[in-house]
Image (cartoon, rainbow, N blue to C red; front, side):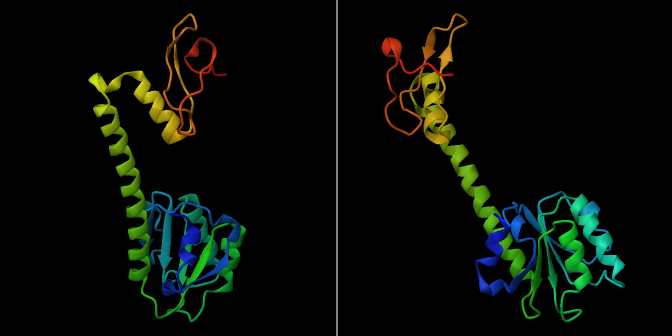
Length: 198
């Protein structure tokens, strides 16, 4: 999912405080932390949720944000419950490091945001897995031994809009897709066997 999806529902109680130009970042997971250095638990792409208990003085914000940026997190969502609002020093640190920052209103539980992100990310992964399984099924059921190279070429053309063909070492066409990249029948080129590519 993209960070901008977090702003699609008012129920999450998120308000963007900075990083609008970075909202196309991909969120791969979510982590809640109040550790001063959570880097060992980060693998990149997370939305980090924090209640700001790690912040004892303004300089702490710069250190915390730098750690998150080095870990390549997608964004930061800071709760308002502990301090009443997100401190300006955190807003400025995120702006300096181009880290998208959201505030979370006091009456929204981090668990609600976590559930939303996990549901969206899991749904997208399930869709990707279903597409892989479908391609595998099509390869395995398209005639003897998977239908030969034409089936693979058809999958490349129809699913990825990528025209491809198999050529011999002398340049003779051995296999061509039976469908064009747009999903229709392949255009016949010289020799009637499809178009020669770049």
